[in-house]
Structure formats: C-alpha cells, structure tokens
Length: 567
Image (cartoon, rainbow, N blue to C red; front, side):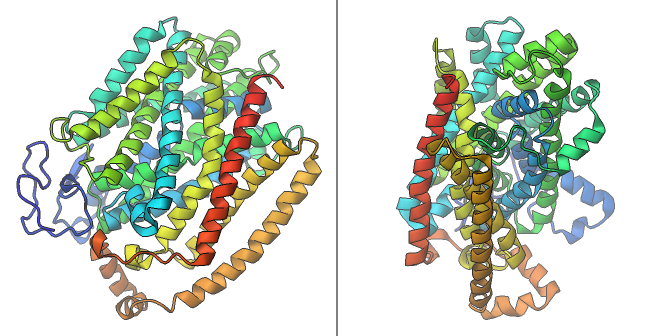
C-alpha cells in the first residue's frame, strides 16, 4: 500500500518524517502512519530502539510513548467505578479489597495482549474479529460493545450530574457544558492535545490517594483483607453481584477495543512494544491504588455511622462523607467523581467510535480534524448528546443503569476475552508475537474464573434457596473441571506448536534473531489473510458461550431490578 504525501502522517497539515515509499500493509487509516507524537515528546518514524538505548533517552522515549495504557487504566476508575468501589467500602468495609489484588494480573495480561495486537497488526480489535471469524461473530462482538458502551457513557453523565448536584448546580447547565468540553477535547485534530488533556485529568484523579490517608485507615486490617479473601455475610446473590460488578468495572470490554485502537492511533509499532508494556503496567498499578483508595475512604470515614451499610449512590456517599468526615473529604470525593466521569466518557466514547470506524472503514483518528473525518466526529458527538439527554430526562432510572452496567460488563467480559485469546494465538496475525504457553495458561485461568463467577450469579438468581456452601462447592467443582480442561488444552497446544513456519521456528531457537524478527514483523494486508480455522469444536464452544451469556445477561437484569425495587 503506497500512501500519498498529502495523506500520510499529516492529517492536520503538519509536516512529519514519513517516506513516500513507506509500506504499511495492514493499516486502514493513513493517519496511523508516521511519527509518534505524544504529550511529552516525539519519536521519529525511522528511529530505532538502539538509537535510544542510553538511560536518559530511554526515559524520554517512555514519556513520549506513554499514554494509551495510562489512559485506559485510569479511565477504568470512571463514574461507575467510583460508585462500585464506594458501595463495596460503604456496605462491606475493607473486606473486598482482595478482589482488587486478584484483578491486577487480569488487567495486565488482557491489556498486554491488545498492545501486541495493535502494534503488530495496525488494525482495530473489531476489524480483526470481523476479518478472522466472519461477519456473524463480528456483529455479535460489536453489538455487545455498542450496547454496553452506550449504557456506560450514560453512567459517566450520571456521575457528572451527581457531582454538580452535590455542589448545588443545576444538571441542565453542567451536563451540556461537560458534553461540549468532551467534544472540544477530542476534535482539535491533534492527538497530542487530546492526550495532554487526558494527562491533566489523570493528575487530578490522584487526589484519591491523600483522601484515603486523611481518613486514618487501620493499615494492618488493610493488608489482611487485601491478601486474605473474605465474604462478609457469606456468599449470596447480592454479594456475588457486587463482586462481578467490581470485576466488570475494573476489567471492562471497552478497554480491549480502546487500547488496541489508541496504540494504533499513536502510531506505536512493534519495536516500541516494551515501552508500551511499561505504560500499561504503570497504569495498572495506579488504577488499582486508586480503586483501593475509593473503597477505603467510605469504609473508614463512615464507620460507626448510620451511613455504613446503606449505600444509595455516589452522590449519597459524598453527602455522607461531608456530614461525617468534613467538607474537604466530601468535596474532594465529588470532584474526583466529576473528574473520573470526564476521563471515562472520553475513553469509552472513543472506544466506540474507533470500533465503528474500523467496521465501516472510515477515517478514525484523533490526528484528523472534524473537517477531514466528519463521520468519526459525528459518531462521537451523537453518543455524547444522546447519553446527556437520557440523564436529563426526568425520572430516568439512573441508579438502575449505574448498578446494572458494571455487572453486565463482568458478564460479557468472558466473550470478549475468548476472542482476545484466539487472536493472540493466531500465527497469521501475530507471527512471532503469538502467546506463549505460559500466557495462554494465565489467560485461560482468567476466562474460566470469569465464567464461573457469572455461573454462580446465574445459579443464585434462578435458585434463590441455594446456600453459600452449595455455591462454594459448585465453584470448587468448576475449578476442577477447568483445571482438567486446561491440562488438555496445554497438551493440544504443545502439539499444534509444531505447525510453525520454518523461518519462525528457526528464529525461536535464537533469541537475538527472534528479537530482530519481532521488531520488523507486521501483519500482512487484511485481504491477503486466509480465513481463520473455525472447527466444529470451536463453533460449538463459541455458540454455547453465546447462548449462556445471553441467559446470564437476562438474569443479571432481573436481579438488578429486584434489588432496585427493594425485593
């Protein structure tokens, strides 16, 4: 694919170091080719890792490349996240901190796979699923994403609404202003400017850390409940719903689509993957520290008050914090809620418009101005406007939407993760970057745990008389089944690894040769790729998962409605 000078790397009219003969077989949008232009620096397209091998140059390179991992991770602590973590702390104290520790490897493993997919393929997650698995599965994937993302964006504006209400400001003023600001952040035709706005919001989000210190937590108890799982009141449907909501708000499907596309939009190529891995790891650590702080603040600030165990909403938590811990804590919590809502709204809306751009093959880059990519920004604006209007409608079931979205994200995550793992093992797509056996074992464990949690919630909803012991026994049985199945898959995977191209097999035996091959290997042009193998076993497995997730989806909605109505 040869790109014209007027198109490549300069959608906003800037001159960038891009060769006319630059060949990028897999890239769909010409704005995705060129220099890495980050918030804190630029990496030229023809630079190599060896030319930036000195310590200080490595640091500047990292600062220039950082962004996609940090934004997707901190954006994870959005309005729904603030509400979910606050509920966990206000209703169960610090007993559920252990869930956050367990989610650290889940976050990193999932997002590291999309880093490789983005840098190596140059194609977004939605387009890869369509291309490798066909329109049927691609449509399911994108429809899931669109419905869940649309509801998630509504929850971000609910967060904006609640923050403004806390300060006594009318929502019909605050919400339109927030929507306009979000559009202006993204529509300047400059990736760097958008990323700098995100960094500014992320910096303020760190206010949750001093908040947690100000409430004087018991650090011994924090360590205890972080490393030792606890189920206050025993395992039941309500507690499982909250745990799945924590999973859903911490590891959401939109994150997979967003980071892969944002890595591509930032023009990160395989030679810079090690830096993007660091970016992702830093983001994971920061988001889990922030999540823990959001849980700890109400857990300790509201202890021995009537508010403990009576969570209503993030707004209710902020008001309770002001009443019992002082206006500084209450005000900071409300401001963090507003800040988190803006970060989340920007990231989730971009995740959706990136995916739509992939599916419909339209320009989909922050490097383009609205004049050069009108459809991309129209999608973006429509999502913001519709979500804002829903929140402004009197008597909208806002609490129901906020509670349900996080749980639904946890329910749908196994499906998204299954496609992610399949793509990460596709040698045609990733070549020398395919998953190792160890990565497959870890990702397989993650998928199975998510399925078991959703199975337990479905069982507790359909059969309300099930005891905690019976649910635990069921989870234990499921773990045994998963372990046996995992052993079989590992054995099968080792056998299939013999089916590797000779040049790649030779490179794998030489670490230096493999590293060199990885720096330059890119996925071939999409229309040259053979269709991925869809065996009967794979079709049956994916079909069964799909049917189950539809049923679980309905059951979660039923449970959320029951909780919202007080039953």
